[in-house]
Length: 102
Image 1 (cartoon, rainbow, N blue to C red):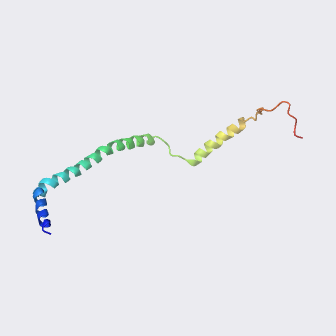
Image 2 (tube, rainbow, N blue to C red; image 1 turned 90 degrees about the horizontal axis):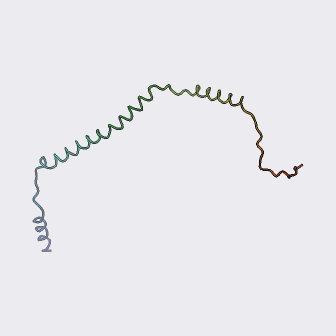
Image 3 (cartoon, rainbow, N blue to C red; image 1 turned 90 degrees about the vertical axis):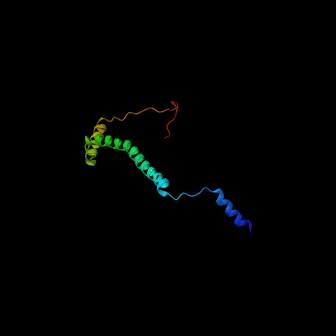
């Protein structure tokens, strides 16, 4: 049990003395971390903001999507194709000597 007090005193001797001045050590570090984080977020926000502005400018000239109008366009296209459709028989790879199944 006598070794325990000696161990504590040797640990205290091995550790550097504590400085009690928080304002000189921790405050500048915390301030630098806070300002660095804010600055980095502002720096990284710029490309996203530019991309959003570019997309907004592209959308300004477009007309809004109207489902009824698109349906009418599709119906007109299908009507034209139905009028021009012609059923053409394509011969298959059959044996010319084949007998009908009747």
